[in-house]
Image (cartoon, rainbow, N blue to C red):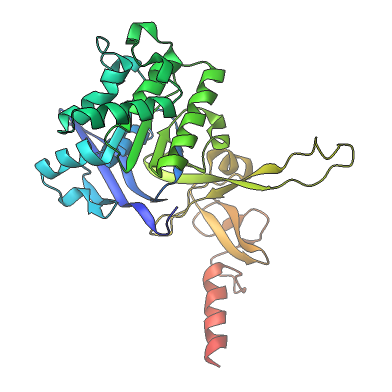
Length: 337
């Protein structure tokens, strides 16, 4: 995996116009993805997940902001350039198997078709199709049609089709949504293997809360903005006295959850935490030894504010505030002296 972002979304905005109504799907979303990364995207229905995928795939254009994929600024590309980008640089895997493959073509012919449309017919296309079907463990089903394949096999063919023209970006929208849990795990394994083998940057939109165990990183989208991320870290396992050397796991997985700040420094606090600590319209920030303390405040009138876990101040009280602003001011004055 090379250093530096392969995907850059900077203050991305998308507004859908339906008759006289405007629906804001993305509200200043910021996101960076490294080349070769396997990324999961989660969020409630209507949060903007599929809209983001459509923009990254060149199927839709943002209303504002900047989106760069592999050095290409998609907002500045012409329609013809965007069409070529979709054909040569992006692979798509959809939830419905019938949307991914043509039912009256065999598995092999389906994988060959994108290469034929790109002008690469012949022996090279057949060899590439055979390589990809073997990579998804379906070489023995190369002559079977859609109706002869299980749901998991159909999705494996779909992944092979998406990789036919060696794209640099693979986008999957709910690829396991119609599969049982064991088959879904097998499909995630295929994505992991192919991501590592071909170095293709892969984004998977999912409602599966367990997707963090299958990808490098998960980002959560809430109300059209990036709200948080979960990073999977693999560490050497600590020895357990009750287990033999053969029973000891070589590695153990650890998950770190983070809140995410956007480019303007805005922080989305999860709803359950806001409700737990009574944070509503406003909050008070205070420096603490380990970072910044966020405290709920409740306005009780025009003259005083009650800061939970803090103190009540009237408008005329002359007391030293421990707010973040005054603390920064004192640090600045100290640095000048």
